[in-house]
Amino acid sequence: MADDLKGMRIAILATDGVERIELEQPRGALYGAGAASDLLSIHTGEIQARQFDLVSAGTFPVDRLVTDASPGEYDALLLPGGTVNPDLLRMNQNAVRFVKEFVATGKPVAAICHGPWTLVEAGVVRGHRLTSWPSLRTDLRNAGAEAVDEEVCIDGQFTTSRSPADLPAFCPAIVKQFSKARVAS
Image 1 (tube, rainbow, N blue to C red):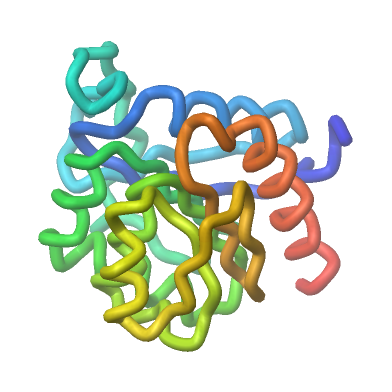
Image 2: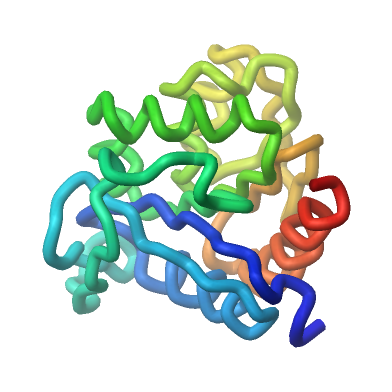
């Protein structure tokens, strides 16, 4: 398990309002499995993290602007949640374009909590089975997805989870799903 993702590079797309634990724990699991990651964002510097959407939870340094990144540089994509983070991302043309182009590559994409909002905005969920924070399930259905209430939902290239409570299942699931990309490539 420690080297399942050795040599792989993962894009993490987030901005201000990201739920700290939903970025930190999956990134740690990916790192523990040997992957490198870049935190892509819609602005330079640092992004503000939150805990339970309401409490300031420090910052994360941005590695690259999403406009300077290409899906071809990465083996997989992680979309953490928090309410504000994906709401800001889905209003940014460059972030939405990156997600849409990434999904078109067929490479694995993982999203947790409110993270699927950006997938909805990119118009890539139709015909797929996904889970999310309960308040997004209507948005998923309206975008043509089958919304389910499961700890981890895997459908093709998508791995989704509902909330931080699902992280103990989500983290190993994304390592497993991302490692399959190596075999497929």
